[in-house]
Length: 130
Image (tube, rainbow, N blue to C red; front, side, top):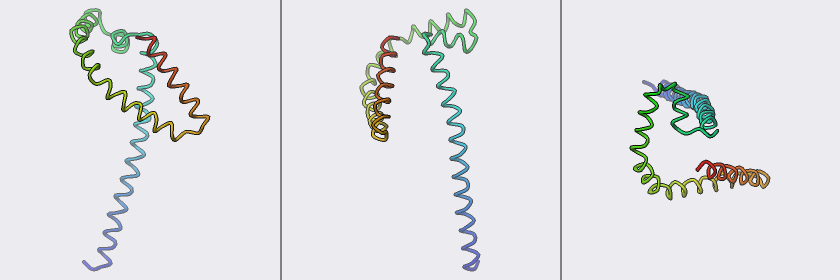
């Protein structure tokens, strides 16, 4: 292969790589955005005072027998989940606080005020649910 052919082959390879990267990024943003919207809608439906069991029953049209069996599974694992959450919660809180601080740094002064209010509202709503 001569030097010119190698240069063309390299250029085509780099072009294909870049095109694949851009295509992948666009698809990721599109699919991730859709998934995020769906997750947000599901969270909102659960946040309206319904329990996880109620949410599953509604979303999956569980029969009464299935609902009772899921309730039993949740109850059997409640203590283990609570212990695990108690163990991991400090690390979770640390990451969440760091993330919030990083996001806050990107915002304007007005946005920071609104962001702080959003966080406070979410915190209050979470406390009321518990």
